[in-house]
Amino acid sequence: MDIGIIGAGNIGTSLARVMSSAGHNVRMACSRSPEAIAELCRAIGATAVTAPDAVSDVDVVIVSIPFFAIAQLEPAFARVSKTVTVIDTCNYFPFRDGTISAVDAGQPESIWVMETLGRPVIKAWNSISVGSLTGKGRAKHAADRIGLAVSGDDVHGKQIALELIDVTGFDGVDAGGLGESWRQQPGTPAYCTDLPAADLPRALAAANRADSPRHRELIVQRLRSAGSAATNDFIVELSRSVSGLSGA
Image (cartoon, rainbow, N blue to C red; front, side):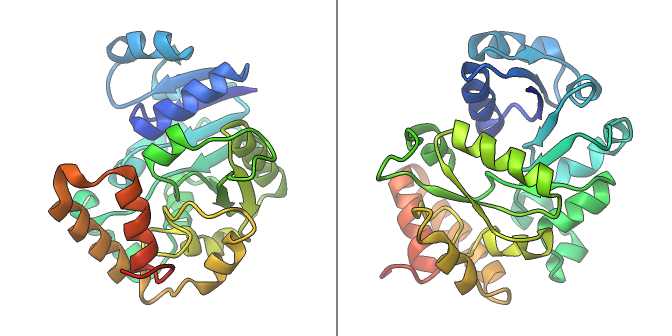
């Protein structure tokens, strides 16, 4: 497939590297110029391009940027074909993104993304830490494979996301329509808890919409306090304990 990735941070770069290794043609763009990320792209097998080029003549666009920057993509997405699958990996963190009133009032993050971009989206890869994404991918049918939630209303787009999640070494789990994507947002039992696919539906069902923003802020607070001691194992256990999956 031809895949455009917008965002050259840890998640976008990790996805680009794995998908390129799997034989997909990957273009990557970010807020900097293509020249600024050209060396990085060469190292991971991707092609550095502008945002408009990343979304033109591709099968899939993956958006992996800070949540506040989503609105800046609106002009580029005006050119995206309706046949292109758009995957949103982003999460809302007020300390970084500022206040987004609709999301603070309870609108699922990816619904806001869909409305902002003017395109249907699939939510995936938002619920795994960078350390787990880069270090815990496993071969298909491995006993310790992690499950990742995938939400969306487009059946074809969701199937593509599930297939690509498999390529990255994880088991995709259909988490329902985009309106249910809040169940995999930060502060929920499905977020950064590294559960196997068999346990993920129970975690999604246990999500509490009223509590998750408070849990999200508690996770952020404890991560800040931990500083350099916040290893990936610390992040996973913290997410599990805050969401009630294990003892604090």
